Length: 156
Image 1: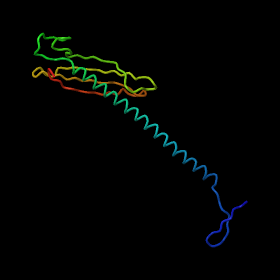
Image 2: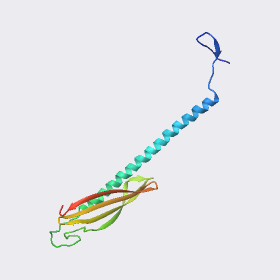
Image 3: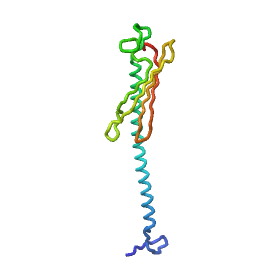
Image 4: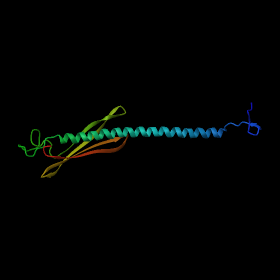
């Protein structure tokens, strides 16, 4: 059955449908739009996960620096020396901690390494630099490093 349409002049002509080429082109364009939306969603999700890992690593770097900052250091106290109960519980040192991030990767906690360095900046006035670097990787990329640097005076 052939459909007939009347145009504005009153003449009848056959109604035309879409050709196979037009249908194929529209399907290809629709596929590209859907693919772009899906790839954008995947990229957005990966970026959100990376941000969560970076924020958690920054928190661990801050935690390492604050642990070193909390150590007792009073150069005017007697007996002098480095160790528990003495005037300096930390000294100028380097140490590392292996921790787990609060964010899970594939259902497993991701381990990171936190490097803490304590350096003497000056003796008069007594001043130390505390640096904490949290090193981590994400999806086989990296290493990434989050750092916290603090200055600490004696007995503070």
